[in-house]
Length: 398
Image (cartoon, rainbow, N blue to C red; front, side, top):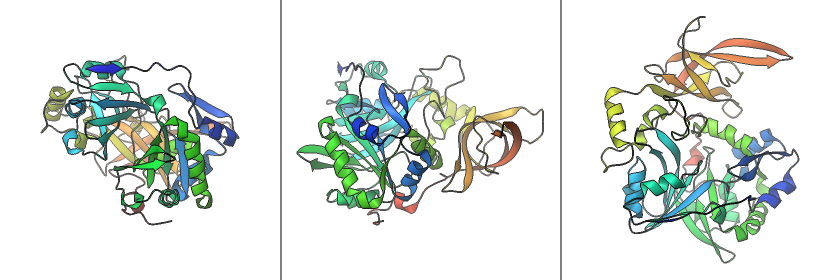
């Protein structure tokens, strides 16, 4: 086992100069040591760029690990709950990884770049855990967060922009596939992935060509209303897509202090990611026991009456007072594109079956006055936003 750790000081994304030049709000936060915009000019307009044209988000701060070596496949397959033997070179897999108690440490994407070569992308940094899990495997693990610049290019006009950028053959790229191109003498990897639930791509290349890529991309999208965006717009799209986010829908198992605060894949609606037909993987025994005995929690997607977002609200089985809550909202939003009041939540079993009616306690403030509403909600089993263009191959020009 070879492990290479990269110690980072204060870093700015290689795209920061372009983002800063567009900034009109001076609203930034720190994402894993990088300065990242909440919004650049108007969060709502940035969100509508995702749904009506193309929004561009700087993905560089996402934690990235390169995994190579003759045991790389065996190692990755042991690491996560899904069967990585089925993920061929040139494909990307969404995955979760658990501790020995079957509780989710994190979720992310694993890129099978080439035979024997993987990139793991995640919210959190996991080098100590990855090192411990690699004992007995002939693999090399290297953090490459600062070595790879990345952009998410998301929205209905994104395919047209990719074609205009000169990426020949991009029309053949299927969802969760990846392709390699030459960009000014540097390898540009393009994956058909994203966090918006819409048609979109993610672009990966060395930082030295980052600004050149930005300029070429925005020139290619000049007539397609391409816009840079911040995390507020991305979060809105993420909830509409029904995607999970660490510290929202779940706490990483290695970060919790109290017992019962973490979640298993079954409790996050990720049963399809747990494959008991493959050899041993982290948390397998605990998850097998949970499958037999049943889970304590269930993730739900809620269509809520009214138009007041149910931020941080409790969920009840009945609308009466003095009834014990059965769960809580983890993410909520009024969806402009769906014209729905939507939310993701966590409820105690056996509540939360598809089609079940529950009640959500919503508090909202208008003109210095707080109001309380018990809003009726229906449990749904599909993403709130799933346009046909998301999976169309080739995508239609827009």
